[in-house]
Each structure stands twice: as C-alpha cells, then as structure tokens.
Image 1 (tube, rainbow, N blue to C red):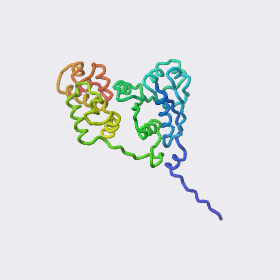
Image 2: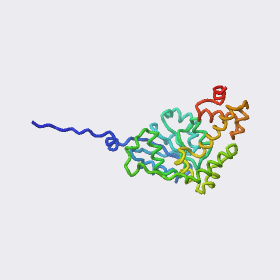
Image 3: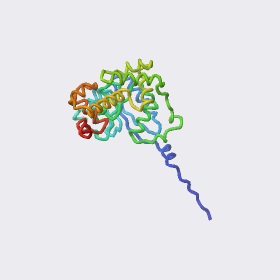
Image 4: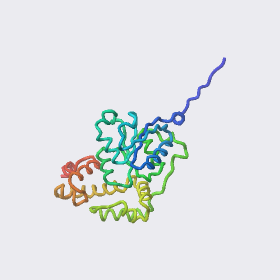
Length: 263
C-alpha cells in the first residue's frame, strides 16, 4: 500500500512564488525622471510590474485602462483629473495617483489632504521607500519581498539636530517655515533631511509643521473666544478656509466642533 505525503506550502512562500501583478503608469516633464522611476518601479519586490509611460500631451491615449498606480508630476496628474474624455475612458475610482515632487511642496500636501492625490514622493526618494509605497498601495505584503530588500533602516536625525529643528518650529510656528530652512538648521542637504526627519517622526516636515499649528489653534479654540478667522491667521494659516480643511483632516473634526466640545 502506497501513501502520499502532501506538504502544505506556507502562505508567505506561495506569495514569493506568485508575485502580485501591478499595472503602473509613469510620466514626468523630465524624460530622465520618467525613465529612472520606471526602471526602479520595475524592480519592486513581491510585485510583477507592468509599466506604461505617459506624456502631458497624450496622457489620455497612452495609459491602459487597468492601471492601478499613476506616478506623475503635478501638471500631468491635474490634466488627468480634469480631462473629461480621459475620465470617461478610464475607471479613475480604482486608480491611485502619486505625485512626484521636487521637494516638500505645500501645494502637494494640500492636494493630498483634499483627496486629489493618494500619496506624494520626492525625486530623491530612496528605492526602499518607493518599494514600500507600492506594496502598501496595492496591498502587497512586504514579507513577500526578498530578505535583502526588507528591514533596511536608515538613520534618522541626530538628537541634537532634531531638538534644534523642533525648537525652531515651535518658536516660529506662526511664520512661514520652509523645509530648506529646517535642513540648514539640521546641517543636512534637503533630500537627506527629508528622509531623516520622516524616519525620526514618521511624517514629513511640512506635515509636522501643520500638526504643530493645529495644536496651537486647538489651544486657542479651547481657551479663548477669538473668531476662527483670527485664530487661523494667528497660527500661520493663509485663511480660515485653509485652516478649517487642515484642522478637520488632522483631527477628524472642524474647529467649530472642537470649540463646542470644550464649552
């Protein structure tokens, strides 16, 4: 009598054998950036990436209907969002938009808060962080990645540098704070500072500044009877509308709701 022993294949092993199929469209005003980004994305661990390239002039005709992720500069992504012909031909509800930025532009953070883009990455984004972003957006478990591509931890800001940056932000929270200025305080290049700050705090410098402004605004909402427009200006927002949108995005409630809760 012959018996057959069947061995169960662990789920993680099965995922490594069967990479997740991902369709990605890439476009940028710089053809070198497009080529470099496409080459990096094609190596995403745990994913079988099918790539297509976009251009601003032909964004509607060059992109496959099934694209899950769309990487592009702000002009291209805006063109895609505003094109009625493109919207009719595509299932935009299922596509995720990732803006490729030259730095930590506030406009892209605002677009992210408003839901116009799903993520943004700097041009100098390390490939490990880009891989993690793709894996997160498509629901690919990072355990499917080869061991050499997982668990790489880059150093954050030195304690002294972070203290100087944090103190500067708290002292100038009502002023216009640029990432360039913060990088100089930390004595790092802009790209290195952005990566190190995110590693230390889990958020971008711009997001951190917004959260500090919202914290200052919350204190005023609870302690004073100042008008919302006055509070917005006092904590560094351009106007009440911007203040209210950002406050709600970060705290989950409007400034008025917060004030009512603490009355």
